[in-house]
Amino acid sequence: MSLISQLIAYGRPYVLLVGDLQRALALHDQGIQVVVGPADDLESYQRVRAANAALVVATGDDAQNTAIAFTVREVAERVPPFPWRARPSQWTFWSWPGHRT
Image (cartoon, rainbow, N blue to C red; front, top):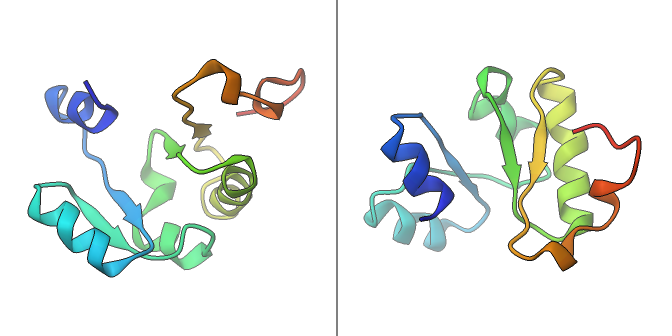
């Protein structure tokens, strides 16, 4: 079961931030709650009201996830960014001691 499926099953609101309009339209057609905007732009997280989120999940590579984490912190200091990784081998510095998520 995907994360979005689980959120829907538990009645939790969510939004997927997508940088590409065509991809966003396709996801919207599948019933996914989607907003178009760059993942590394402060305004994107203001528009999706990240400050009210329980969690922000980042699904990019390490560099992208780091940029997202710093951007989210500017808008929503109390909201933990969570780097989503499908395979444990993909976990790198996110699991280093002292890294605060």
